[in-house]
Image: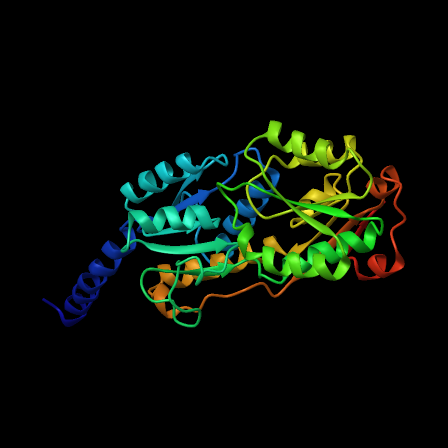
Amino acid sequence: MKRRQFITLLGGAAAWPLAARAQQPVRMRRIGVLMPGDENDPVGKTRLSVFKQALADLGWTDGRNVRIDLRWGRGDANRIRALAQELVGLQPDIILANSTPATVALQRETRTILIVFMTGADPVASGIVARLNRPGGNITGFGALEASLGGKWLELLSEIAPALKRAAMMFNPDTSVASLYVPSLEAAARSLKVEPIVAPVRSDAEIEAAIIDLGREPGGGLVVMPGVFTLGHIISAAARSNVPAVHYLSDFARDGGLLSYGPDRVDISSRAATYVDRILRGAKPGDLPVQFPTKFEMVVNLKTAKALGLAVPPSILLRADEVIE
């Protein structure tokens, strides 16, 4: 065999393993996602869309190199627990838990499958992690809210509705962590001389009844606590009973609620994708610190204020990130 032919043959043989490797299929990673609300909930759909887009920007495309198994809890605690068990049974590489109840339900089912959470509760007080800086175990994520917001919501409600005398703290006891915000809200209530009222609700009928009762006399107001609710029903019930309300999500104000103040949930969803990316590439959840919001937003709806007979003070207009006219 001539020397040139031998070198050509040798080079071709060396290329065979490379060609074989190039033809191997891309490894499909599996991500479980447990959402607490309904599949038609615009808030949940937006957060999911942002998360998936952020993942794609990081190189993970659903259907190409990742498979996303999505489940919706529909605000039902029993359903959320059953879906947590179902997702764990699929043995995904990682699960994204979008709420405290979803996170707690998943923790009951597994201590080995990796979990990234987006929760409104204090993750240490809720028993989700041992420490914020080094969570340990199989879980880390993003706390969406902090305890002081309870007082902030009541202060804003009193500012936009100065005749406020009574404020109902509305929450879904199956999906909410209202106790986190009660101390700061009660402290603000004492300072503002407003009577705080506890209003647990589990259905549209209970929402309607609580708001009608609140609106029977002048001076009633509503603080909508984080949790799973029928967004549109709260807004329409408050409008019918002429009750001013402050909400924790900007979507409420954009859809007709009076006022909202809270973390930028879109930003949190995007940041959660960075943790999923790092974990899929080998990072350990227990070594990634729990993070908290860096962006907050206030939205005020002037149309709703006018319908309620309220004049929005300049102090709120100047601080608002968005004013709906």
